[in-house]
Image 1 (cartoon, helix red, strand yellow):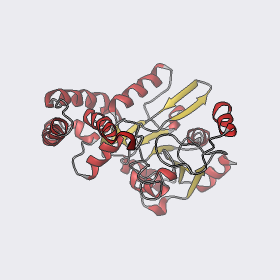
Image 2: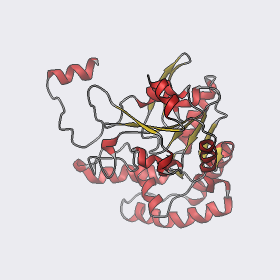
Image 3: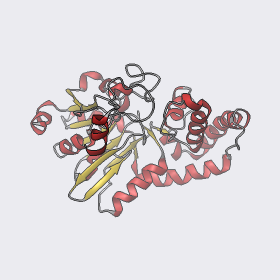
Length: 302
């Protein structure tokens, strides 16, 4: 049924989670990707994971789109995603070591980076909240999005511009080190060390970096089949979810338009993924949570 659906509704189909994440989006995307030309991630970061099981084995993907296993499918990490280069490089290298071709994986030059100080601040902020913590993954995703909208972010494309990159890092670290040393009594971040790290990332990521909005617009004009691969779920949306216990970017189909750089009229269909029983990780309310024997059975055996 899904294959027939995807064949008839393209060029662009958004696949989003209808609950708090972990609904099985990766499985659905993997099933549909063999009929697609492009699979594009549009939100979140490596705080969300998709498990894919295929003849090559079991793979846990956190940042690379699930379509990577199909020859001819181009996989794009859109501008709405925040990227920890270490996670991407590790994931890419693992796929290569297991015989997966990653030559068609591209990263938007407009995507923002998750840098070491984001991860550090994420952990310090959660600890400071004490028993009122939000239950973040402490992977630096929230602080990276904060910097994006505060106009203090470093973008993937900046890695290819060494002089500009150093200027940006110097400006940002003046602020971050004030917070680290005076608010949290932590050690400052070295400009030289983080700059050298970024230069290494730039060399590693250069083959994957593209101006992806042009690629996607051209694909749409050619009626190519495109899957927008969502992360997390609708109930974690910062506007329509269980705020403040949510995520930092919109996991909805509408957010996907911004996250890959297309107009809403380009989206032909949205597929919501649900599972028979709801689960939730991290902090926040879950009104229908089962705290009895039935709930224990579902958690342990399902």
